[in-house]
Image 1 (tube, rainbow, N blue to C red):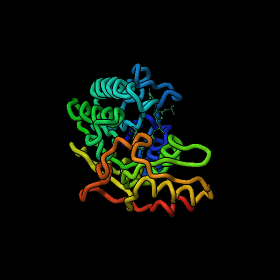
Image 2: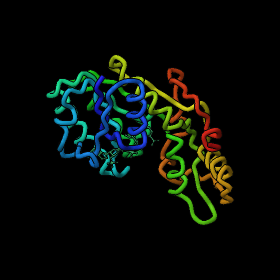
Image 3: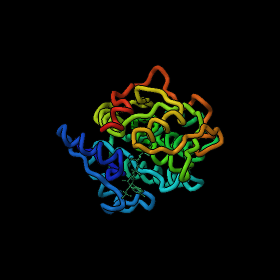
Image 4: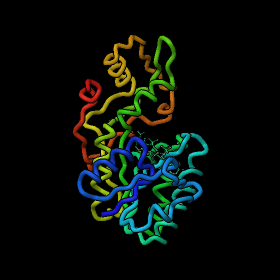
Length: 244
Ligand SMILES: NC(=O)c1ccc[n+]([C@@H]2O[C@H](COP(=O)([O-])OP(=O)(O)OC[C@H]3O[C@@H](n4cnc5c(N)ncnc54)[C@H](OP(=O)(O)O)[C@@H]3O)[C@@H](O)[C@H]2O)c1
């Protein structure tokens, strides 16, 4: 199967390309560094030529008020070009519980991305993942100073990027879901607890302070980022991943 992976040089995209090629498919990564700009559409017809499937793993450069426009424009361009190229299946990676956090503009932007895909002309699949382990350091950095890290008690169920990529690759080579597959990590943590585990594993002696007004996830009601019973549970545990 020929699969165009837009955002195929990113954290998840590069892993998806590797998994697909290792299993005998022809996955080609595309991004600005390979000459494709999904915002302008430049390079898109060439990237989609002959593709059976397109997987969109791009990300907005910012999580702020600019993110809805990024996802709107990139999805409009993608769907128009993919329809013209006769691509049979479009896959997008979104976030578990995104529609339940309207206070976060980035999450609203991800729901917009899903809605454009659902209303569009292509057969589609949405994979919704929980927060990536690899994203936790960024979360800690937002509200850290020399001595403390302030984190809300919001509960999360994070997962390894490698497990996210496997889930995306599995969906990409299967029949279009015309719906959503949820994937999540094997354990639930309060974010402040996750901060303590992370700092301890690194020998970082800063103090974690529970603060329900701190950082982006302060806007998140307590349990909405936790997967429901229908989710596929990934195998990698956070402490094992940290220890590697
Ligand atoms: N972080 C989380 O915990 C989480 C959880 C669930 C879902 N997600 C979703 O997962 C997706 C992938 O995230 P990620 O962390 O893998 O992203 P990432 O590492 O930031 O990679 C983004 C990719 O998009 C490409 N890109 C950016 N602007 C582009 C443009 N205008 N045209 C074409 N390609 C462009 C980048 O190319 P360059 O490398 O050339 O810049 C890169 O390949 C995102 O949509 C995000 O919403 C994230």
